[in-house]
Image 1: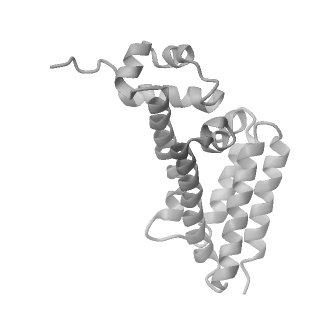
Image 2 (image 1 turned 180 degrees about the vertical axis):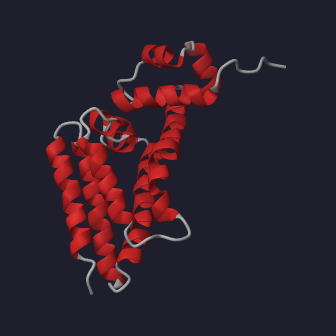
Length: 196
Protein backbone atom coordinates (compact mmCIF):
# COMPACT_ATOMS: atom_id res chain seq x y z
CA UNK A 1 0.00 0.00 0.00
CA UNK A 2 1.37 3.41 -1.00
CA UNK A 3 2.06 6.21 1.39
CA UNK A 4 -0.72 8.82 1.59
CA UNK A 5 0.08 12.19 0.09
CA UNK A 6 1.67 14.40 2.74
CA UNK A 7 0.39 17.65 1.29
CA UNK A 8 -2.86 19.53 0.99
CA UNK A 9 -4.01 18.90 -2.58
CA UNK A 10 -6.37 21.90 -2.65
CA UNK A 11 -3.61 24.20 -1.40
CA UNK A 12 -1.19 22.89 -4.04
CA UNK A 13 -3.78 23.34 -6.80
CA UNK A 14 -4.50 26.89 -5.65
CA UNK A 15 -0.79 27.76 -5.62
CA UNK A 16 -0.36 26.29 -9.11
CA UNK A 17 -3.50 28.13 -10.27
CA UNK A 18 -1.91 31.41 -9.27
CA UNK A 19 1.24 30.59 -11.26
CA UNK A 20 -0.77 29.64 -14.36
CA UNK A 21 -2.94 32.74 -13.90
CA UNK A 22 -0.01 35.14 -13.83
CA UNK A 23 2.39 33.35 -16.21
CA UNK A 24 0.16 31.31 -18.53
CA UNK A 25 0.39 27.58 -19.20
CA UNK A 26 3.27 27.68 -21.67
CA UNK A 27 5.41 30.10 -19.67
CA UNK A 28 4.87 28.47 -16.27
CA UNK A 29 7.94 26.34 -15.63
CA UNK A 30 8.06 23.25 -13.48
CA UNK A 31 10.54 25.16 -11.29
CA UNK A 32 8.01 27.96 -10.67
CA UNK A 33 5.25 25.42 -10.01
CA UNK A 34 7.50 23.53 -7.58
CA UNK A 35 8.43 26.75 -5.79
CA UNK A 36 4.80 27.88 -5.51
CA UNK A 37 3.47 24.53 -4.30
CA UNK A 38 6.49 23.54 -2.22
CA UNK A 39 6.40 20.13 -3.93
CA UNK A 40 9.03 18.30 -5.92
CA UNK A 41 8.52 17.57 -9.60
CA UNK A 42 8.04 13.88 -8.81
CA UNK A 43 5.35 14.70 -6.22
CA UNK A 44 3.53 16.92 -8.72
CA UNK A 45 3.71 14.26 -11.44
CA UNK A 46 2.61 11.56 -9.00
CA UNK A 47 -0.38 13.61 -7.82
CA UNK A 48 -1.48 15.12 -11.15
CA UNK A 49 0.10 12.95 -13.85
CA UNK A 50 1.59 15.85 -15.79
CA UNK A 51 1.85 19.61 -15.96
CA UNK A 52 -1.33 19.50 -18.03
CA UNK A 53 -3.10 17.48 -15.32
CA UNK A 54 -2.11 20.12 -12.78
CA UNK A 55 -3.34 22.83 -15.17
CA UNK A 56 -6.70 21.07 -15.56
CA UNK A 57 -7.06 20.94 -11.76
CA UNK A 58 -6.10 24.63 -11.56
CA UNK A 59 -8.75 25.57 -14.14
CA UNK A 60 -11.44 23.69 -12.19
CA UNK A 61 -10.33 25.44 -9.01
CA UNK A 62 -10.49 28.81 -10.80
CA UNK A 63 -14.05 28.12 -11.94
CA UNK A 64 -15.12 26.95 -8.47
CA UNK A 65 -13.32 29.60 -6.40
CA UNK A 66 -13.23 32.67 -8.65
CA UNK A 67 -15.89 32.52 -11.39
CA UNK A 68 -18.89 30.70 -9.94
CA UNK A 69 -19.16 32.56 -6.61
CA UNK A 70 -19.69 35.79 -8.56
CA UNK A 71 -22.43 34.18 -10.64
CA UNK A 72 -24.47 32.88 -7.66
CA UNK A 73 -26.97 35.80 -7.72
CA UNK A 74 -27.62 34.95 -11.39
CA UNK A 75 -27.83 31.18 -11.02
CA UNK A 76 -29.87 30.70 -7.84
CA UNK A 77 -33.55 29.82 -7.72
CA UNK A 78 -34.63 33.48 -7.67
CA UNK A 79 -32.84 36.11 -9.76
CA UNK A 80 -33.44 39.72 -8.74
CA UNK A 81 -34.15 42.23 -11.53
CA UNK A 82 -30.99 44.16 -10.62
CA UNK A 83 -28.68 41.14 -10.31
CA UNK A 84 -26.92 41.51 -13.66
CA UNK A 85 -26.40 45.25 -13.22
CA UNK A 86 -24.98 44.52 -9.74
CA UNK A 87 -22.64 41.92 -11.29
CA UNK A 88 -21.27 44.45 -13.78
CA UNK A 89 -20.95 47.18 -11.14
CA UNK A 90 -18.98 44.81 -8.90
CA UNK A 91 -16.80 43.84 -11.86
CA UNK A 92 -16.18 47.51 -12.57
CA UNK A 93 -15.07 48.07 -8.96
CA UNK A 94 -12.61 45.17 -9.23
CA UNK A 95 -11.26 46.46 -12.54
CA UNK A 96 -10.87 49.99 -11.14
CA UNK A 97 -8.55 48.72 -8.37
CA UNK A 98 -5.07 48.91 -9.95
CA UNK A 99 -3.62 46.49 -7.40
CA UNK A 100 -6.43 43.95 -7.74
CA UNK A 101 -5.89 40.48 -9.18
CA UNK A 102 -8.19 41.07 -12.15
CA UNK A 103 -6.20 44.10 -13.30
CA UNK A 104 -2.81 42.51 -12.71
CA UNK A 105 -3.50 39.09 -14.23
CA UNK A 106 -6.78 39.30 -16.14
CA UNK A 107 -8.91 36.17 -16.38
CA UNK A 108 -7.23 32.77 -16.38
CA UNK A 109 -9.74 31.39 -18.90
CA UNK A 110 -9.63 34.35 -21.29
CA UNK A 111 -5.83 34.35 -21.09
CA UNK A 112 -5.90 30.62 -21.86
CA UNK A 113 -8.21 31.17 -24.85
CA UNK A 114 -5.59 33.50 -26.33
CA UNK A 115 -2.67 31.12 -25.76
CA UNK A 116 -1.34 28.18 -27.74
CA UNK A 117 -2.69 25.66 -25.22
CA UNK A 118 -6.22 26.57 -26.42
CA UNK A 119 -5.54 24.55 -29.57
CA UNK A 120 -5.90 21.45 -27.42
CA UNK A 121 -9.45 20.15 -27.81
CA UNK A 122 -9.98 19.60 -24.09
CA UNK A 123 -8.81 23.08 -23.17
CA UNK A 124 -10.87 24.65 -25.96
CA UNK A 125 -13.94 22.84 -24.65
CA UNK A 126 -13.37 24.18 -21.12
CA UNK A 127 -13.13 27.74 -22.49
CA UNK A 128 -16.32 27.24 -24.56
CA UNK A 129 -18.09 25.83 -21.49
CA UNK A 130 -17.01 28.90 -19.47
CA UNK A 131 -18.54 31.18 -22.10
CA UNK A 132 -21.72 29.08 -22.12
CA UNK A 133 -21.88 29.31 -18.32
CA UNK A 134 -21.65 33.11 -18.55
CA UNK A 135 -24.35 33.14 -21.25
CA UNK A 136 -26.72 31.02 -19.16
CA UNK A 137 -26.22 33.18 -16.06
CA UNK A 138 -26.54 36.45 -17.97
CA UNK A 139 -29.64 35.12 -19.73
CA UNK A 140 -31.32 34.64 -16.36
CA UNK A 141 -30.26 38.14 -15.35
CA UNK A 142 -31.62 39.70 -18.54
CA UNK A 143 -34.87 37.72 -18.25
CA UNK A 144 -35.34 38.95 -14.66
CA UNK A 145 -34.59 42.55 -15.64
CA UNK A 146 -36.42 42.68 -18.98
CA UNK A 147 -39.28 40.15 -19.00
CA UNK A 148 -41.16 42.37 -21.48
CA UNK A 149 -38.52 41.95 -24.21
CA UNK A 150 -38.84 39.40 -26.98
CA UNK A 151 -36.56 36.35 -26.80
CA UNK A 152 -34.53 37.76 -29.72
CA UNK A 153 -34.03 41.09 -27.91
CA UNK A 154 -32.96 39.33 -24.73
CA UNK A 155 -30.60 37.04 -26.63
CA UNK A 156 -28.98 40.02 -28.33
CA UNK A 157 -28.52 41.79 -24.97
CA UNK A 158 -27.04 38.65 -23.40
CA UNK A 159 -24.58 38.26 -26.28
CA UNK A 160 -23.62 41.94 -26.00
CA UNK A 161 -22.99 41.64 -22.25
CA UNK A 162 -20.96 38.42 -22.54
CA UNK A 163 -18.88 39.86 -25.37
CA UNK A 164 -18.22 43.11 -23.50
CA UNK A 165 -17.19 41.24 -20.34
CA UNK A 166 -14.79 39.01 -22.27
CA UNK A 167 -13.41 42.07 -24.05
CA UNK A 168 -12.84 43.77 -20.69
CA UNK A 169 -11.14 40.67 -19.30
CA UNK A 170 -8.88 40.47 -22.36
CA UNK A 171 -7.91 44.16 -22.21
CA UNK A 172 -7.44 44.68 -18.49
CA UNK A 173 -3.76 43.67 -18.42
CA UNK A 174 -2.80 46.12 -21.17
CA UNK A 175 -5.38 48.93 -21.07
CA UNK A 176 -7.50 49.25 -17.95
CA UNK A 177 -9.29 52.26 -19.43
CA UNK A 178 -10.49 50.19 -22.38
CA UNK A 179 -11.57 47.42 -20.00
CA UNK A 180 -13.57 49.88 -17.91
CA UNK A 181 -15.12 51.36 -21.07
CA UNK A 182 -16.32 47.89 -22.09
CA UNK A 183 -17.93 47.36 -18.68
CA UNK A 184 -19.50 50.83 -18.85
CA UNK A 185 -20.91 49.95 -22.28
CA UNK A 186 -22.47 46.78 -20.85
CA UNK A 187 -24.01 48.77 -18.00
CA UNK A 188 -25.33 51.33 -20.46
CA UNK A 189 -26.96 48.61 -22.56
CA UNK A 190 -28.54 47.04 -19.49
CA UNK A 191 -29.78 50.32 -18.06
CA UNK A 192 -31.11 51.65 -21.38
CA UNK A 193 -32.91 48.50 -22.46
CA UNK A 194 -34.99 47.98 -19.34
CA UNK A 195 -38.04 49.95 -20.42
CA UNK A 196 -40.93 48.43 -22.38
